[in-house]
Structure formats: structure tokens, C-alpha cells
Image (tube, helix red, strand yellow):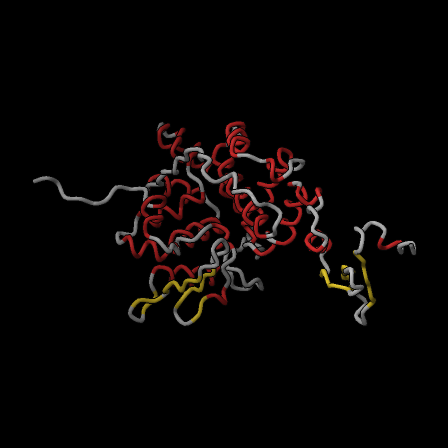
Length: 349
């Protein structure tokens, strides 16, 4: 038998690699299966997929290393995660860092619901454990589509940890104390977050050219939901329109097209916003303590920038309007998670 070329020695029997240098300088690589009749069948350019197809053609079991969770995680990270939103990509990367040390070396067919439950119980961060198991469940479903797993998804039916929905509400006293201690760019960010009801990352990404024809155009980073928030009412600027004019006047002379800028004209990043928020909140809490109001100081220290979004949702009387502003497809989400004050009702008499 003729010896195999060096580039084919790591491949299974009857499987071959072909490569060709293209005009653009890139190397084209593809794999082929040589059948009993001597004809070549294309297996594509992905080695793992090619090996699976080879196993089908040879009527053999798929190579064992492809059925380890490590290889499945690698492929999921390469092929699936890049198609998600930037924030979800970050979350998935953090979740995989927790899952990999536990499951990397396990064959996918060996994972049982009991193992998933043990992982859930061992994690101290109960809410994060729920998110990690949700990602693991999706990995299993994708692996089934890839033909790497025939068994039922072991995550199905496993109880999730109970999650307590955050119910903190920043009343006017808390808001006013932090707002008074805030620098000008933090005040702009607070006002913009409150009037638009958007997430912190979406507020920081807003630009001057997003203001078009009496609307502020918003594309939510987490859900890709598109909104047009009115800046005028009956031909006159509303509260959002007035705020945008104030921000534009403060940014005059700065070349950056972002709305939230510091005094030097630099775009405020998430880290910068967090630092300014911590400084303002700590200063406001200290002032409350000095004025003999420790209860207010405690409430101030609990206030997070992300609480501005539910504050906006809670202070819009009409649930439908609140849900539309937040970009929710279901009003139940707005009602259950973001409305943090009781409904206005009449007394019995």
C-alpha cells in the first residue's frame, strides 16, 4: 500500500485532505472520503463535521473525542455564540468558564439529570446557576442537531433554583439625594435613562444622529428591539426633547457624536459610569448619615443605576405604555419584574 502523505496521516482511513492557495493569499482546505468504488465524496472544510460524516459513510461510531463535552463546548463557542448579541456573548463566556471545569471531560451520553441537579446544588450563586444550566440545556439541544447526542436533554425537568425578583424602588428622596451629588455627565445619564426607560448600556450608546424627525431612535443591544421615542408632543418639545437640547448645548464644541460625554468631551464608558455612580451614591449616603437619617442612607446605598429603568416603568400609569417604552413584547414581564409600586386604588368608602 502506498504510504499516506504527511498531511493525511492524522486522518482516518479513506479520508483525505486537499488544499490549494487562492489568489487572495488564503489557503483553501477541504476533506474527502474515498469510497469502495474509488470515487471521492466531499466532506466539507470543517474537520469535526468531516469526521462525523466519515463515520456515517464507514458505518462506524463517531470518534470518541467528538463526544466529549470539551469538543462540544469548543464548537458551540466557535459556531453558535458569535451569532448572539454582544452582551449575551459576554454572559455565555462567563457561564462556560463555570461549566467547563465540571463537564469538559465527560462524554455527552454519560451526563444525567442527577448530575445537573448536583451541579445546581453545589453552586453558591443560585441565580447564576440557573443561567448556566439554561446555557448547558441549549448546548445539548444543538449537539442533538449536530448528531452528537441521541438521548433526551438531561437538563429538561431539572428544577431551577428559586429566584427572588428585585423589588427595590428608588423614591424621590433617594433619587434627589444621588442626583444632587452627581456630576453633570451622571445627571445626563440618569435623566436620559429615566425618560427613555432603557438599559444602562443602551443609554451610553445613544448618539446625536439618533435624534431624527422628532424621535429618538433606539436599538436595544440585548434584544435588538427597535423603538422610536417621541421628543415632541403637539409640535412642541416634550421632556425628552428638552433634555436632548440641554445635552446638545453641554456637548457643543466636542467632536464626539455620543450624547453622554464628560466635561473634556470623552464618551462615558460603562466603567466610568460605574465609578461616577459609586462616588455620587457614597457621597449622598454620607450626607444622609450626617443629617441624622440612617434609614435614607441605607436606601441610598441599595440604589443601583439599573434601578432607574424599573423606576420609569413604575411611574408610568398605563401598563401598556410602560411595556412599549421598555421594549417588552409581553406586558406580564413589565408588570411582574419592573412595576415596583402598588397599583393606585380607591378606598372602600
